[in-house]
Length: 282
Length: 79
Image (cartoon, rainbow over all chains, first blue to last red):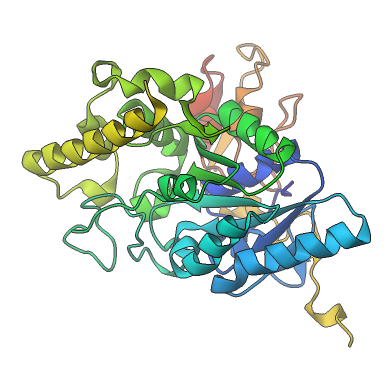
């Protein structure tokens, strides 16, 4: 759904995720400020084969809701997608939360590159523990917010986490979301070569290492039940994971980490998995 | 109200011929390639066709195809 020759950086995961939109019938994108809005095209050109509405940060889900209602009344079958970054999920959280509570019939996609990449890698609430960003030069001290769990708490009709590392899994989740009615939410893990400081050819490798080390959990929530997805399932068991250091050391944003920092992060990750396992009942 | 000035139109190469950004050019060894289409699936730019031909006008040379190729049929050659 995106044409070659767009403005994305070399090895951009967002551009790759946008290619997967062809799994969804009649998509219409609503994009707030962020990398995605730049990737979608520089005026007067658009790199997208589908309608795109560029909107201010906090209004994304409200606009998407209105557009969907308008299409409904006009008798047009369209899948309206609020395509936001993790930064826009911070800034537009009130609208996102309200939209989920109203059960708007839209898909919300969060391309999570764990910082405000478009404006120069400032830390967002989704930024990984102790990651170096331009607003946390010594490593981020705060927690990482788990947006997907928050959406489950909103009793959304479909919640999934995905990654560009496993493209078939991502495409399946897009397909599944497009077949369900109601509020659907997909968070895609997007390793960003310039922001995380690794060579552009490593995007997929890093995305897979995140899953294999347990740093990114792949799951789906529908029919009031949480299920770990096929590829990610075995990494629920700690013994099957690769060492976290292998994932972290491949990225420049973690070059300052000492061994005890990695142990602390591992503990935080284990705690998140405990919560997820309790939810899934596995 | 005339909305035309604020509407963008679809264009192949919305940012121009992005192939000029490239430092390394991926070259496919057709003898080793078994057409598994992994490079086609993972190319962020979508410049590799299902017939495994690369559109060098827009390929930015990120090297993901080379990394993903299990046959090791893709080589990055300096421009």
